[in-house]
Length: 427
Image 1 (tube, one colour):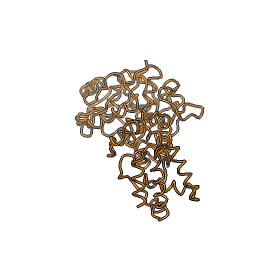
Image 2 (image 1 turned 45 degrees about the horizontal axis):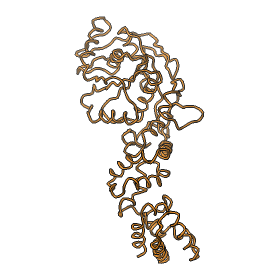
Image 3 (image 1 turned 45 degrees about the vertical axis):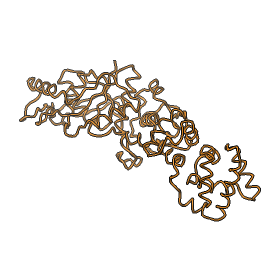
Image 4 (image 1 turned 180 degrees about the horizontal axis):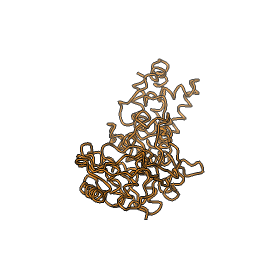
C-alpha cells in the first residue's frame, strides 16, 4: 500500500511551495488508494507556534487536502530518536562527541537511487561528512529524525522539493544503518518567480493564507498548483481536483523549474468565479463584504445574488468584487476623481442628469430594458449620443467609469437610490 507523508514545520504559515508539495503527495496517495500522513516537524521548540500549526492545518483543509490517521509530532518523540542513536553507537556505527551523537559515514562509496522525476541520481560519500544525529542540546538533527519517523510510519514514497535532493544520500545511509529499506524518492523542481529568482513576496504572496484573504477560490489555487510541474495533457488548463486524482501519474511531472505567474493564477481564479453558481458564491461574498466593513444587511440575499450575477463575470477575485460593487452597500463609496472631472463637473452634464432623472422618475417600470429605452429616447430627442447620458449617469451612481451594464445596475440599485444620487450629482 502506498503511504506518503507531508511534513510541515509550524514556524510560519503554509508557503505556496509547501502547499504544492502537499498537493502532489495527496494526489499520489489518492490515485493509488493509499494513505496521506501528516508529520509535524516541531523540533524547533523556540520557533514553533500553535497559531502557525492551526493555520497550516486550516489551509490544507481549505485546499481540500484531507489526511489519514492522527498526525505525529516530532517534539513528542525525542526519546525515540535518542534511543535509536544510542543503539547505533552500541553497534559501532556512530560515536559520542560530548552530548552529541554522530554517525560515521563510510568513505569511498557511491550511493545511487532512481528518482521518480529525475531518473538515476548518484552521490559519492567522500563528499558527505559524518552526520549529527542528536545535537548537543538534546534535539534531533533533521535527516536522522526524518528517517526514524518514516520507518515508523511505513512511508513507501517521499515526494518533495529539489532542495532536499542533497539530503537523500544522507538519509539512505541512515536507512541502511537501521536495517530498513529506503522508500522511493521523487524530487520536484522548485517554484521560481517569473524572473527566475527564488519565489518571494515581490512575485506575489507566498503564503496560502494571503491568497485566501485576497479572495482566491481554493479550487483555482489547487488547479494552478497542479499546473506547476504537471499537466493533464491536451493543452488543458482547467481541471478539478477530483479529475486530477483519476489521471495523475508522477511520471508526467516535469524535471524543470516551474515559474509562478500571478497573472495566470488570477485569470484562472476568474474562470472559477464565472463558473460558480451565484448561490455558492453568496456566503463567500458576504464574508468578504463583512471583512471590508460593508453593511451586508443593507441588501437582502435575493438582491445580493443579483449583484453577484452582475459582477462575477468581471471580478477576478472575491476582493475585487467588494471594490467593484461597494456602491450597493453604502452611500460612502470610492469615487474616481478623474471620472468626476470628465463626466460630472460641466453644466451640460448636470443638465443631462437632471432631465434623465426626471424622465425615469416618472416611469413605473424600473426594469433595465425600460430604463435603456428611456435613455435612447432622450438621446434621440435631444440629439445626443447615448454615451453622453450613460457615462455621467454611471459615475453619478457608482463613482466609477466602468462596471456592470448601467441599466441592469440601476434596476438592482432601485428607483429611490438612483434618483437620490442623480439629484445629488446634478445639483
